[in-house]
Image (cartoon, rainbow, N blue to C red; front, side):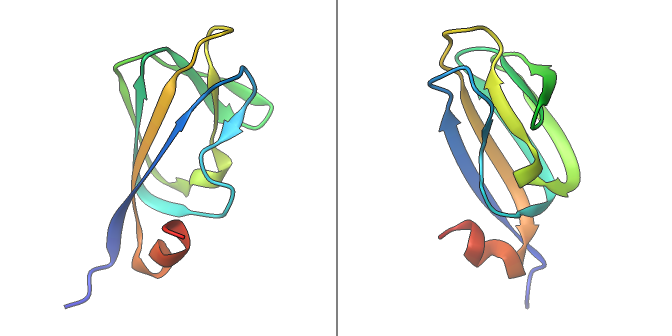
Length: 98
């Protein structure tokens, strides 16, 4: 029996205070959990990164493209760790796990 989606995960530690994408390719997802560790993080779209997720929190999103999300440290000099866990259509899994 074929399943329609698989789970993929990505992690990134922000080592500077610039905006960063987690992935640099289109990755539409069904569900996305964003876990923030060590320090607070800002998130949003490129140039409009003003949403905030506090360290230890998880944010949940549905039906969007992970490439459209950017993250940065909420405070200058922090090194926050972002972990994204997403369910993606099986047809896109091979591109996600290159």
